[in-house]
Image 1 (tube, rainbow, N blue to C red):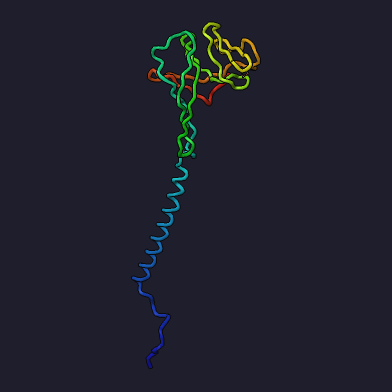
Image 2: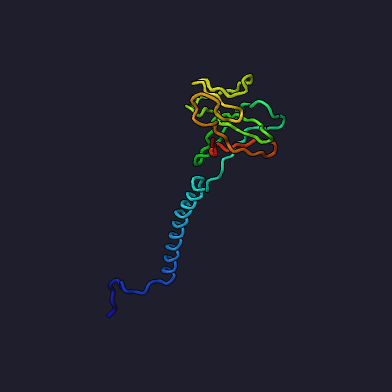
Amino acid sequence: MKDTKHNSGAPEDPQRRTFLIGLIAAMVSFITLVLGGSGALYFLSPAWRGRKENWVAVGPISGLKEGDPIKIDFVQRKMDGWNVIQSPSSVWVVLQKGEWVAYDPHCTHLGCPYRWDANKKAFICPCHGGVFSKDGNVVSGPPPKPLMRYPTKIENSTLYILPEGAKA
Ligand code: FES
């Protein structure tokens, strides 16, 4: 007599099995690609790149000669993740014995902006009377240390400074 019940133990169709295995493999590959790709993008983002020196172009120096210091205004651009932050800044520059010197424009006492007095040949801080010589040393007043100097370099007749490298 023939068995008319549903035969659950019947052999599967080999083509169907191959199709399902291929489908599962494709789905796993797709998920791996999506998750792995976004993870790779995260690690390639600017926040993970190695820190590099942020030299800032201050301006052309052709035509500038030894003499009184001059104040140069410039815009400093910094990367913060994907954002570019721009901040106006300034620097005092002077050519001394053939070498460019760049001073942070803030007094080393309490951070006031100082100015160059061409008659006295000195930097004068208006806040508490601090006086600095042309080479940045304290002449008188409360400043505890010389003016902060930025590292400088010249490329294509343009003066660059390294703000984070400032030291007295
Ligand atoms: S801030 Fe310059 S002397 Fe005080």
